[in-house]
Image (tube, rainbow over all chains, first blue to last red; front, side):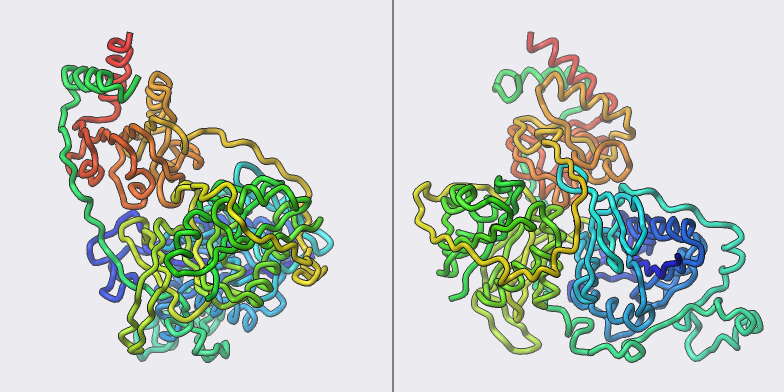
Length: 295
Length: 340
């Protein structure tokens, strides 16, 4: 048995290193001002896909990511770790999308590029939004069942998948028929590292959007390689390629609007400043005990 | 006028605290709008057992869906309940808990109805909105307020055109308050088969373990919380020791959880637990909005930090300039000495 698996991955700004120019005046994220990384839980998702590929030879794992040209980095990284290839979903029309417009674009791309998919796996949520909405919304748009908060795939046979998932205060084992959508928790197995041979093989992979403007693969220094090895060309899909309805894409297709954004400045309290010296700590403990704050 | 709805989450026949918190908030929103508050409860064997846990919060109409396949929760049947009920009733607002169930169900419902959904709101208000581009004015929209972007900013989100306006809220963010123990609300026992076709029961739950929460962070009078500045798993052992002598609970910031210093259950903040203790001791926590959102209503805040400019010091009553490693053992020592 071989499977067709799609992994949904996102390149995210590293929210741990945010500067003052991180937001545009319109209240959307200024992605160019931040280091971009592979969304951590999408790596957990990729690992689950690659484990199925190990288990069922002939399985294909394709990554779909939506973003600007540089988001193709996510697809390359996934290929270095074991994915077969992927598609960069890129178009100006997708800009400013909320989760609903994003899931519309992703679902439409899956229908176009991988209509006979068996399993769609993504991270539970992305660190730039923390919404956990795109996975379930893609599932709904494709009319598929979903299993969120996946910890581990326990078995897959006879068109059925059994999954251990996290629930509030515990765990649950559930069974669903295929095809379905899984979202994977950060506590699931970490992703395997890059494979050196695969890095050598795929390091020159490029999406058309990554080429300097007005150039083609034929203009690149290693042009002949791209001719001999078509897998070096990362698939790219625009709004028109997938026949997406413009009214459902990007800002136009987003029911939620950002009304305003504030950088919160804490209202300063009158605080008592102490050092870590024995005298200060002793005095503090005595004060708190005297006022029955502690003890 | 179209009602405010709250989806009530159930564990067996017990209504989740987060749902009662949302009913309390929902009642206030409904009052502001001058509309009814309605609630939905879906489970099995719940009729006669959940009404008293829901209506006293000021619920005017409770829709009960009672059928075998609705417990435990699975995605598609509960989605069908809400989607088909909402198509019929056209609510203007729908609130649900931002826990595993709400975060599984909310996006699914919002996608089916093409309505906007905002996750993990920390505040909900009603207010006007002007869309300058379209030149349109809206009198009373739901302001869905949440820290965004790793907690570096606070965003107000609105859904001008699509209904219902949907939001999820974490447990502990709102306060549950019974409005009137004898509140008169209508109970409607819905015909489940009309809402949920047989074909929707597609997930089989093979096994399920739910344990009572391991910690009592939400109700603890004193919280000792550690951040990235604690430095290691071993560093957290010190916090546990301090918590033990103070009869406190240990919590953590997201940075400490992400760094693997402690368990995910301990996370305090927008995407974790919200606490309101009498005393909050922040050890090596810088104080991103994300974290502050979950503890700012603490009585007395003590910040131990070797960075004098840590944002959390701004809201602290006591700032101790020093490392966690140095200060925490001293707190333990002097507490033991002085409390005798």
